[in-house]
Length: 109
Ligand SMILES: Cc1ccc(Nc2c(-c3ccc(O)cc3)nc3c(C)cccn23)cc1
Image: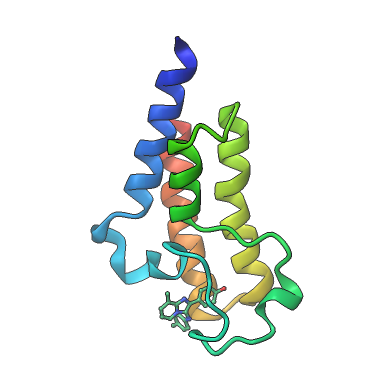
């Protein structure tokens, strides 16, 4: 069925965004943010819907998404959270924009 192919495409995009070739700027988005480890204790005061690429990959494997729009929502949540917590001009903010540019290009394909 078509849905299976679409979900495979989504998984390929998550794999691409997690690729080592982007390791200089994708690492803040690969796994759930650990506010203690990253010394950002207020993170969950601002971010009520944490999201990361490994969580999306797991949800895809467990068929937790019913439509590609739900996958797109979670991927965009990563960037939305990034820009909420990391103001314009910060390095992590710029890392988010770089990864989002790759996502927008691949998603539009
Ligand atoms: C230049 C720079 C400065 C700080 C960080 N912090 C950070 C973050 C992070 C993720 C999301 C977020 O909204 C804020 C921070 N995740 C990491 C990781 C996994 C390893 C090392 C540092 N990390 C990374 C790069």
